[in-house]
Image (tube, rainbow over all chains, first blue to last red; front, top):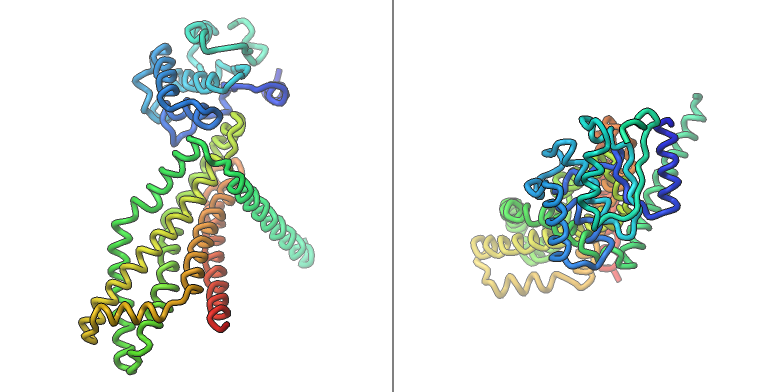
Length: 142
Length: 264
């Protein structure tokens, strides 16, 4: 499947469902810290109190072992941490279906999908349904 | 392309730009009236923008107002004294320095410092697809990015223009006591007599329009930047040209309105 075909399928899904997207085309906001990037959706879309948001985000950062990146800006992060932050941000979208688009473009050092599977397993209590979208030639990595 | 086609193409582009700008401004206004910006995320942006636009500039602006204000007042007092027009001193201070120069100097300074920054910030966000990222998460960029900036610019222009006016009046008081041996009571009385309610209404209406245009024009130009980094300077250039055009237009309209209202 070509990149355009992948994007078209994701767009169609986004029109159908409330999709929390983790994609190389959807960057983190460069002027916000890691914490603010993740908390943004809760602040904008929900009435959650800041203390509640802070508690959950701190726990999630801890679960993925990136607590030390909490106050860093995206340009200070490596590709794996950026992926983790994008994943946590997508999970903050209420009642959403998580789509991970071309994970190996974002995690270019990963040999297979196991690091992502491990992240999702760690965050099982926060994640709902989801799907991976990727090129045909990456099939053997799943 | 022949001459006629070039004129037609230019006219179409101009019309498209103006209608795009008007619909963008109307969307901002509609969201403002609906109170959509009352959420924690937009509030944070509003506070940060007021910090960058007004608070960070406050000390520098106070010094600048004192220096510029004293220079203008000094020149005016010298002229008034040499022409023997002391009885018109209040009208001259209020009419020229307080009502015209205060908002004008404030808005030019803010346009140079903050409008250009906002224009390039939004343009870079557009090129980096950060605005697409917001939209993909159902965050309306008008509510989250644009409205807080527009509101903060309006607040900043109003506060800083008022500060400039207060500092100018204070330096006017110092000059009047030094040059004409005028007491504080006489100076205050003279200023109070030379100002009308219309003047105050026009002063604040003008600061609101200035604040609106020097924010909404750069925001619009940043937002319609194409997905190319080479388009960022073009966007800032267009935005700043628009800002200066709008300053001139607001200034002319306010002068006409003041003349009309004062002649009633």
